[in-house]
Length: 305
Image (cartoon, rainbow, N blue to C red; front, side, top):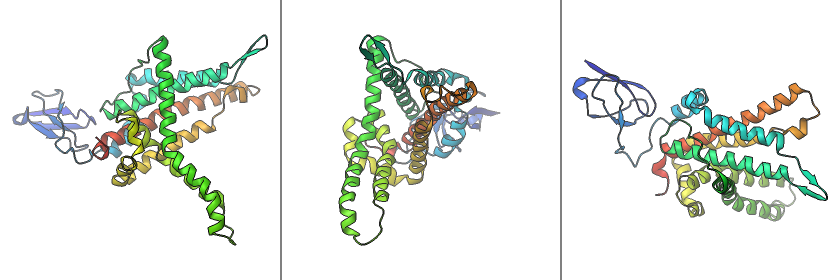
């Protein structure tokens, strides 16, 4: 009699003879090691892989197939609604101020901080959950009162920190190129902006590994050691290029969408279209950060201890 079950990581259908019940095996699709259940239809239990010094297989399958169906699973609706609510709040209220007598209250700025803080907090939760092999989106446990504002402020600061640390050296090189390039290529028609844009792009390219190291509690100081950032990229270049490309695309979408104050004179259909674009940008950022978490999960052997 055969024992049928599903891989606890990728949900691939597996089957084994009853004489193998209770023994260790590995999924042929993703390589996850598990204990074969005792009965047909039972739950296969994950076991720690003995190949800790090797990448976990199945990154591309998880990045494409599983990410495509991520937002269609009912259990993930709460997280998706939370991000959409933050994006909608930012869309309608992110650029307004209130005047009381001679004072202006920067409601728009406060709204932007709270909205982006909530989004950054949840995206970091997504990275952590995926890194820890949780396939569903995490629950909303951001807290109330001072805990809420503390999580909002901390998350947005960590995102800014993860962005600035890798890009600052390249910004300095960009400024240096403005001085050196005309001297090195005097008499030629070299476009200095190409060097500047290249250095800025390099800084943005390292953002995904930077936010990954910070989010999975490797320590804020880890991003200051270049090899901690470079080694995972060199060891798994195609996977990282794909991960960085998705993150850069997500950031570009956020930069291209408009808020309500920009389109409030347009028709309702146009306003609805821009609102939908904002919500879509938020949902795509969930997928982008999930892929960052997948990179950390499958190539954790290259991350610093």
